[in-house]
Amino acid sequence: MNKFKILWKAVLSVFFVCCMQTYSGAQDLCDLPTSLEVVPVLISSGPGFCEYELTLDSDIPLIEGVHCTEWIHLTAPDDPLSVQEGGFSYSFILDCELAPETYCVRLRCCEEPVNVVNACTTIEADCCSAPCDATDLTIINVSTPNVPCELRVEIGGGGGGTGGLCNEWIVDGVVYASGADVNSIVIEGCENNGPHEVCVNVTCCETGEILLEFCETYNLDCPCPCDLPTIVDIAQTSTDGCNYRFDIDPALLDSTTGLCAGWSIDGALFVSSATGSSLDLTFDCEDNGGHFLCVRVFCCDDPTVFVEHCIDFFVDCPCPCDLPTVVDIAQTSTDGCNYRFDIDPALLDSTTGLCAGWSLDGGPFVSSVTGSSFDLNFDCEDNGGHFLCVRVFCCDDPTVFVEHCIDFFVDCPCPC
Image 1: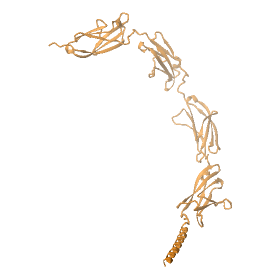
Image 2: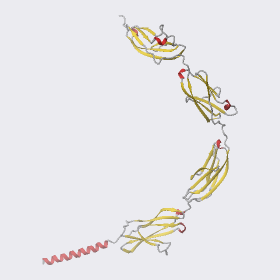
Image 3: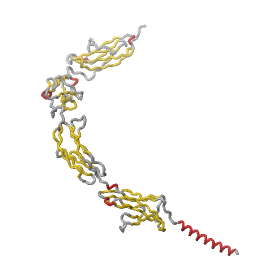
Image 4: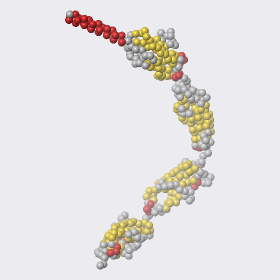
């Protein structure tokens, strides 16, 4: 009995496994989308053609080897290549003269070709529009408001398309400007006055097609503010190394030229001289050394239009005396009330031409009886800090001097 039960259970188990495998195999049939769309994507284009890639937009994932496709070119049903098996994308080149064209896809389960989902798209080939539009392409001579000294020539009209306009401008036989969308040129300045032959060649950048060839002569008549010289020379004279005269050609500033002049020394602001074409400068020995002078000749009614010239020169003006580099003060006191201050007496020798003055606590400079010495007397009310300065100067020109100062302390005993 037990053996029969065991055998029966084995048969049932085998039957159950076989049924489950059959059921499982039935479940392996693939699903098809309820929504399928063919999406065209432009890859490239050229003269007379467009390249597209068709892809699939499905509401379920599509699996290679599970789902199979056939791509159909409906506008060529007799073409043996009009039906092609493929994957989930399809690339082709569209002849612009044959557009629009329709492509479809049949999607099915690879193992069950009975059920099919179809989707189609029509390609209008917008990329085949004219690369350049030369409609109403014209040349315009434009007068710009408030810019009287300007000759402007522009290209008007045209536009649209995908190719862009390439323009080559030729002025008086020489290429003036060129490039994509260089749609205008400007000739300006009175130095360019006169007739100019302006030509432009307009081509389609993409195809090289010539869209417009144009030449015309225009005249620029720009009033010049004045007739500037090419260069200005400066003549320099000096008799003593202290007084200098600088001259430019006086004919430059004649009343008929409309020119004025300004002078600048060592980079300072330009100023006009009393004589216009001449500049007189006086120096002293403190100015000795290198300097530079510039003259700017400009249009009197427009100082921004000018020509400039500069020269270097050297001042070597005799000094009234030979000043020492530094002056030392020696201080002595025996009792804290009486002080003597001394400088080197050789400085004030009769051959040096030097004199000395002394100043206490910022007071006026005075000369001492002895010249190189200065005596001061204090009492206890003056106790505290003080400072003394000595100024050694040229006797015949006190404005030329060297100065030195020291601090000192008064400690004078007070009476009881």
